[in-house]
Image 1 (tube, rainbow, N blue to C red):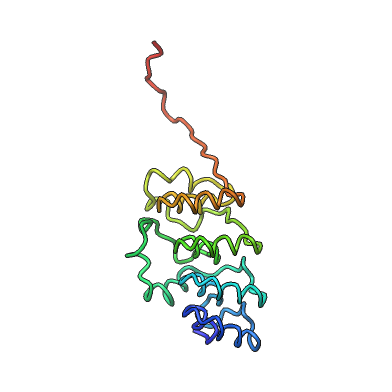
Image 2: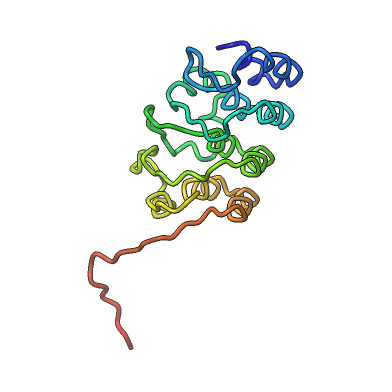
Length: 186
């Protein structure tokens, strides 16, 4: 990782501020993700704010496989998350907003949304068969933020769910009946 990515991951805001004067904060480097992606894992709001103040792109995507390889081995996401049943494709492109939601950093999510982060509308980053049955209709939906709402639901995080809804996240469940219902009408 680049020094700015290491400083961002370690939440060394002063070091990030100093390095941002000399490097492009949006540079991926060899590892394939930006300093903002790295800063969203530990969730230090000061570090994220420093990066945003230095023109970090809040909508820049990174390859999930690269993020996992470089960061996840340290944070042990799969053991800490209640949503560990959701498996992301290694080819998936993810934003800092999605990382902040995965690690349940509500203040970071709100900061990113205030600074223009777009709610993802794609569903191709999740292997639908690995998702719990109760949230599959939400993940199939292509409404803005439906994936993030599904993650908040899987984590039983009402505060995150309400925050995302306040910023325009929606889901519309399209339930199609495939078989005739044998329900008596009397």
